Image: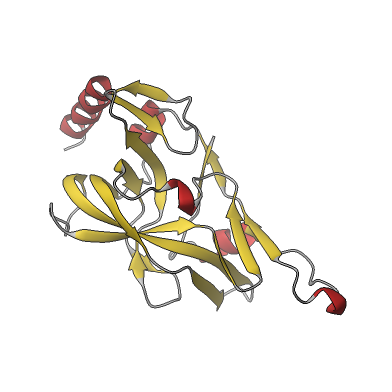
Length: 197
């Protein structure tokens, strides 16, 4: 299963997803406090990724670097709070399959949910951890629209992240058992794009 974290327009849904633990006792101030972020469960297979209507941007690219983790800590309109840490992963776009305003060669920031700042740590249950995005890795990303999550950085949050391996396969980064040949994956994606124009 894959999860979706909605950032931006549906902030109340995100507020319900972040589940920070109770504050640690004073004597354990050095203890790491972990916040687990979960989301809406989605199937992780390629067909589900391609057909998911929440994908505003679909592109392929290569991971070129990680930036320092960032913290989102803001109030929602309903009086709740959104608190999580993410790691910006910079990807150089090779090809844009769906979406406007992005071109090959452009760098885009991907919001990889998870990371640690000081004694605060965020883990994401339904998506790849930031360290899974390895520099040089070739990805196919199905993402939400780029938004500022409240920390002044416009980034995309992936709904699905697929990796192209050297053997000609494409697999879900979070659930590697969802694997298919790159040829079949690309043909399915091309067919979907042609049908949805």
